[in-house]
Amino acid sequence: MTVSVLGGGIGGLSALYYLTLRQNATKIKLFEASSRFGGWIKSSKDDKTNVVFETGPRSLRPTGIPGLATLQLIENLGIEDLVVPVHRSHVAAKNRMVYAKNQLCMMPNSLKGIFTTIPPFTKPLFYAGIKDLFTGKSKVPLEDESIYDFIARRFGEEIAQYAISPVICGICAGDAKEISVKFLFKEIFEKEQKYGGVIKGIFKSRKEKVQDANAVTANTEFTKRAKIEGWSIYRMQDGVEIIPKKIVEHLQNNENVELNLNSTCERITFKNDEVHILINGNTQISKHLISTLPSFTLGNLLEHQHPILAKELKSIQYVDVAVINLLYNNEDLLKQKGFGVLVAPSENLGVLGVIFDSCIVDSKNNTVLTVMSGGKWFDKHYGKDSSIQNIEKVALENISKILDIHEKPDVCLTHLNRQCIPQYIVGHHARIERIRKYIAENKLSLSLGGAASDGVGVNDVILSSKRIAEQLVL
Image (cartoon, rainbow, N blue to C red):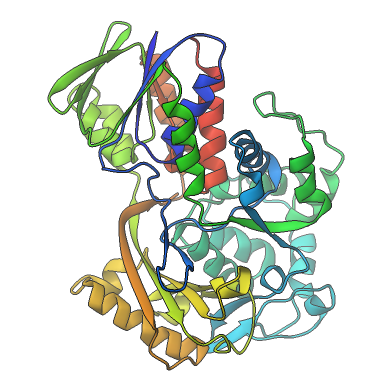
C-alpha cells in the first residue's frame, strides 16, 4: 500500500514520521510545493549577534495531551537537550500585558491581583467570577457562539473586550467576535453547557477521568520533568525549526520514504480505491492521501470531482500576518520585563502584539522583540500599501507608542506570511464535521490534517497527524 502526503510543514512531516512507526511496511511519498520543509516554522540566526529570530511559531506549551505528544516526539528525535524551558516562576511566565485604553496594563499574576481594581478594568476581576457563578445555565442549549459573546455572557463585557479579545489576536490573529468558542475552547464551552457555568464546570468535572485511546499515555522521565519543574512554555535552542529538520533527517534514512520538494499538486481524483494525484504534470497513484494543505488549496484541487466538498473547504477563511523581528544593541530598553504585550482590537492599531524575546531567552545583551501585525485587520491597515517598508514603519510607530522605545533598531527583519492562519468562525466545528462526514459517506481515501481541522497550535497539528497515522488502516 502506498500512502501519499501533501504538504511538508510540521503536519505532513509528523504524519510521515508516525506512519514509519507502524509495523506494516508501507511506501510513503511526501510532496511539498516549495523549496524547503517546515512550512510556517522558520528560524534564522543573525550572523553578528547569533540571536535566533522566529518568523512563525516560537514557543510551545508542555500541557495537556497535545503538549505531551510534542514532548514525546522531541524525545524520540533525540533533541530533548535542545529544549529551553521557561518555568512558571520566570518573569516571562508571570508578567503578561495588554495595551488597552491607550495604556500598557499588567494582567494579574497572583490571587491578590483579582481582588484589586487594575487598568483597564473598572472593578476587581473577582466580580467577573461572581457573575459566572450566578448567571446560570442557558435556557436553550447553544450549538455555538463567538468567544466574545460567550465571555461577555459569563464574565462581563470588560473581560471580553480587554482580556479575551487580545488573547484571540495572539492565538489565531482573529476577531473574538467571530471566532467559535465551541472549536477553540471546546472543553470550556461543553462544561458551561453541561453544568451551567465555567467555574462550576471546572470544579464539578475535576473527578471525571478523561480517557483518550489515541493518545500516548506513557510518561517518560523527560515528559515528567516538564511537570515536576513547572514549565510554563519552552523554546528550542537555535529555533523551533530544529523539530521539522530532525524529522526530515529521520525520514531520509528510511528506505520506504520518498521526500519531494518543488512538487506542486495540480489535481486530485478519486478512482475506485485509488487516489490519482497530478504532481508537476505526472500522475502519482496511491491507496490513501493525507492532506495537510490549506483548506482552500485542497478545495481547488478537488472541485472538478467533488464541488460540494470543495465549497466547504474553500469557505474556511485565512488571514495574513506580518512578523517583524527587531534587535536593539541596548539591553535596557524595556521598562517592564515579561512575556510580551497583546493589543486590544478596540485600540485600532496596526499590530496584534509584541513578544519580548530577550526576556525569554539569552539575547547577548540586546533587546529583541517580535511584532505580530495584521491578521483579521490586515487589509484595513495595509490594504492599499502592504509593502515591507510600510509594515515596518507602522510596527516601529507602535513600538514607540506602546513601549516608549524611540531608538532605531539595529536589525529589522520582516516576513509577510500570506494566508497563514485559518479563522475558526462560529460554526467551524459543525463545518469540519460535515467535511469529514462527506469524506466518509463517499468513501474517499482521504485524511485531513493541518491547522484548519484540529487546532491552530503546533501541538494540535502534531497530535492530529499522530492520530491520523495511528488510525489509518494499512
